[in-house]
Picture 1 (cartoon, rainbow, N blue to C red):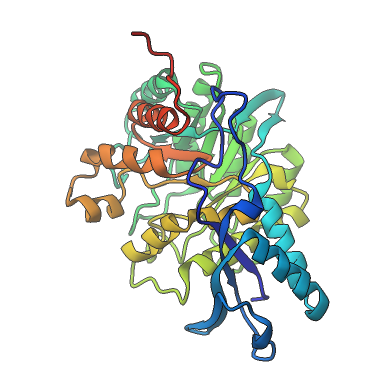
Picture 2: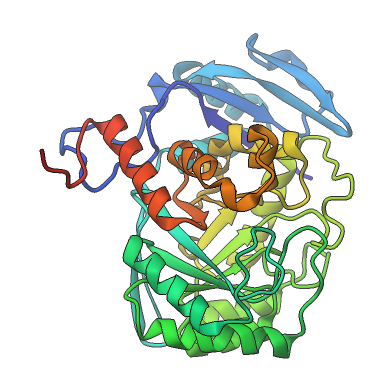
Length: 398
């Protein structure tokens, strides 16, 4: 993997986004010079250690050799100036590009798919409500056997304040079996058709099959959420070009998620030399492939894939360093609702009893989108945290 720069702000404690009810004079994005940055430069060569700042050191992570450390904003800019003079590999430009991605304002997305116009305000946290039309969801909420119950659940989520819905017809829990294209279509498409005419929020479809994606888009789906990052059943990082071109042609946004291996095998001793760098590598590669296939970068969302081919330590490392992924220049989606990690931290074995833990993590996640089972609880948690951070109330009266 080529050299890259991972940056993480360490001293700016607030949300990266300002909610729509913020005071006009509240500060927006952090000033680079006022921020302490965690810096990681991957694949550091053996020839140029001498001009690293004193605050950085070389560390080996398996086969990866990295320069890691911390710099304040002024030192980071000074380092950029020095690398511009002595490094021919463009390191200074990589730092500048990554820093710019961290400091750029969060967008308000406006897009249209099949004549349906959609708006998603990414300047605040958004809630994606999970609607599982499966038989074997890990959280016990699979509703494939009762289509009307699934639709009713989705309508209730919209009423509770979901910003979008995510309809999935194939379980991706550890060890889940494969569902045929026809069966997934039968489960998903009628629900999408019903919901598109009944709710005023985007309906996403959680699928890795191009055939299901096409049918879902034709039925009115506004976004594709793919746990394989458009690779489908392929493991090759270059797979998915045809799918990316199809999404580009239909102007459909996509969530690109990281998963090591497949649901059937992903939790069998997952291993990384450096989990944050490797997940970042993967998402960067998938972003670049999609852009090369005609998908605008402002129609892509990244998801590090909590629980997908990771053990508890991997998941916590990704959550702790979640701000690193802002350097990709993509909105961040996090899906941890009711997952095993929360059971490990709380000792709660029943996934359906982990909603409180899920809400606490949603409140502090600093994500553009959180994918949850309990929309009402997540909405309350986000309102509380926004009020705490910005000293405002959300619609309450004395």
